[in-house]
Length: 101
Image 1 (cartoon, rainbow, N blue to C red):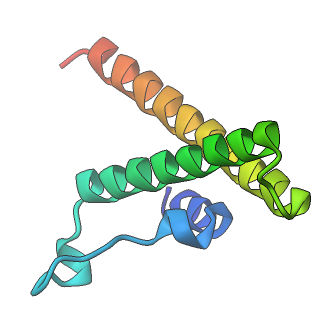
Image 2: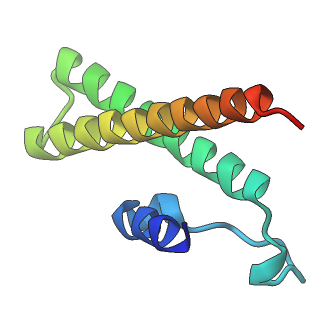
């Protein structure tokens, strides 16, 4: 299981895999909820950048089409990753609720 978690950490983009620690908080104190919240916030920022890129393309304000396409790709990839994480979490929750005690 630990190997699986390490592999997930390896495939996450650097900006999604990092957590913003509060002042005085050590690395071991960062909870899963904090990591998830930060990842959702970063995904939201990437989505906003993607929407801005689409708006710039539509209005002709974009100067570098390549950068706009990269922003859209990042937004799409981060959203797909978040959806997969959500699906895995729901599957795990359903599995736990079916377990007999």
